[in-house]
Length: 149
Image 1 (cartoon, rainbow, N blue to C red):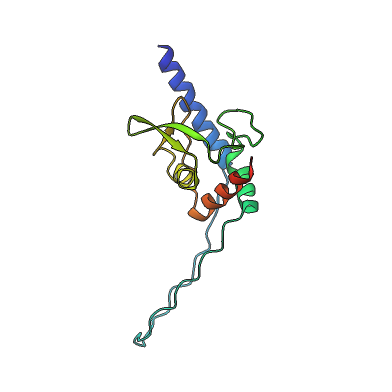
Image 2: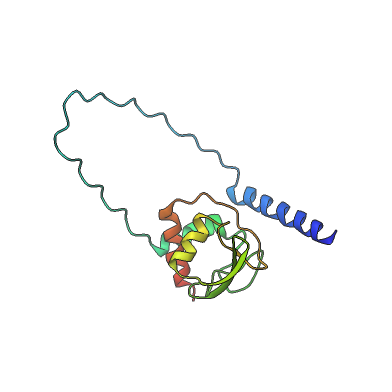
């Protein structure tokens, strides 16, 4: 019975923090103009896409303050979830598809954890909600986490 109550409390907490973090803001996209028809035959190759700007720790800090700080701290103290301070390079015990394994909190692990938070869950930890981060946002957050030593 206790485990059911603990699970219920955990689910309610995660849901409420997700709602709190999202802030209930509604955005409205402006309708775009319909595409123009191209009557000319394309003979040249399309121009290569410009590389996305490099993720910056400064952008990552803003994102952490807006989207992550409700659950994570940056000062080394544990709150609802683990602190981001000192996280980069740490060894973590995670559960992946029901099996425990050790991982290093490197760039690849952190990006995966942000983009797909249910892929690897911390042993004895909560479940991070999917914040629907874009890859560029996740990279910026990782750059910021690297600075928190």
